[in-house]
Each structure stands twice: as C-alpha cells, then as structure tokens.
Image (cartoon, rainbow, N blue to C red; front, side, top):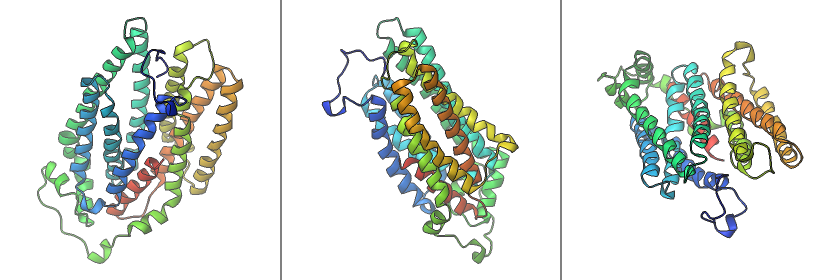
Length: 352
C-alpha cells in the first residue's frame, strides 16, 4: 500500500513499477470472470438460492481467513470467486421484482465502498503513530468486514425469502415457467409451485438472442468498468508527487471517489435526472474516456485540489451511469429471460 516502508517485502522486479492495487486487481478479476461466465451461461441448471448462499458464505470465510492468516495472500483469489457468485446472482434475482430494488442494491454496494473508506481513514488516524499500525488497522478492517458478511449470510438465508414481496415475485416467476425457484419458495414456507402457463407463452429466448438484444447495455457496463478500473484504485494510489496531505493523499482520493459514487447512484431517484435513452447512455459512457488524458496531465502538472475534483467526478459519473444502465435494461421479457439478461450484463462488468 502507499504506507509501505522500504524494508517491507519487495515484489518481483517485473512488478516493481506497479502498485499493489493494480496487481491485486489483475489477480482478482480472472477468478470472478471464470465463475460468472460459467454461471451466466448455465443459469437454467443452477439453484439460485444455493448459489447466492454459497457466495455469501464464501465471502464471510474469505474475509475471516485473511484475518486469521494475518493477511495471507491465499485469501485474495477467493474474493474474486465469490464476487462472481453473488454479484450477478443478486442482480438477476432482484431484476424480476422491481427496479427500485436494483437501485437500492447498487447504492448499497457504493455505500459499502464509502464506509470502507471512512473506516480506513479512522484506522489510519488511530494507528498511524503506533508500532505496526498498518497491520493493526487491516486486522480491524477485516474483523468488521467478516462480521457484516456473516450478517449478509443470515439475512439472505432466513429473512429475505420470508418477505411477502419476495414470495409474491417468486410465485410469479414460477407461474411463468421458471424451474429454478423451488428451493427459494421452500425457504419461504411455500411447498407447491403454481401450475405453468401455456408452454407457447413460456418460450424462452436463447442466450445468444438475449445478449444481442442487449449488447449496447452490456457494452456500456463493460466500458464504464474498463475506464474506472484503469484509474481506480491503482492509479490513484501510485506516487503522483509530493502534496501537503502527505500519506493521506491517496486515501482522500479513494474516499472522494467512493462518496461521490454513492451520490451518483442515489441522484437517479430524482425523476428529472433519469437518463433512459440507450443512445444517450452510450454517448455519455464514451465521453468518460476524456478522464484518461485529464488524469494524466493533472497528475503530472496539477495540484491536489484538481486531482480530488477529478476523482470525485469519476466516482459521480460511474455511479450515475451504472445505475442508469442497470435500471433501464431490460424490459419486456419473461422473468427467466430477465434473470439471464442481467447476469450477462453483470458478466460484461466482470470481463475487464
């Protein structure tokens, strides 16, 4: 991290020029990519309740193992695996309910990032002048993370399936021909599935047809993630010169990105700020690539105020456009097709 001392472990020569945030991102993404691709293209054969429960439990165990093993590297890949399980699975499950649920879910993801940044700032302030302070702060961080992941397991297993609105939409899913909700209904105390409708009405689009009909949304998510992850967090953590904030500089940049990412995912609740045009979303997504030269020249010639502003705007646009894409697409499909389509769009996000 940015606080590492020269005497700490030195990476291999081939990786010396890269900050650990860049390297860990590359180690993380392939696991998520493989898992979510397998799950997305085999959705009809997978029990969604077991998939999501497995993901949440593995999230908890991965966070706990890092804590127990004192930040051992063996835990890093596991987080990529479970992100592939949970991210696409929850989006697919919520999308056949109400679009407001997607808004809340993705805003919650951003809120988690903002809280993580706040916790990082608190632990740095608390342990900055203590012996082995970075390690102590990290251990506290993972202890709190493990606790919240365990709460997620309990809530998804015992609270979520018993909510009346969840039962209603899962029954509706079953009535439209879905064969993957039996375990979900059983968890909610419903042992019988309503009779299926006319098979001709249940005809399901192929995976290829679903993807082609929503290729622009998938491309939007891919490009949004491509640009954002090219800058955040690796570039923001790298040494871009000396500033008055000192070792707090990178942490402030990350915190501002996360806070404005959360704001961006919430402002779409204002009806006059909704962007639903597919063409408009693509234009807005492509226009974000001006951040590449903007960050390069600001890091080289600008001061910390300009970099903080750019980081904030990067987070704002990423949060706003991401939630606009996810809450705009898709529409007019059967429930099973909705579920699949959102998983393919989530797959596009993980592809980078």
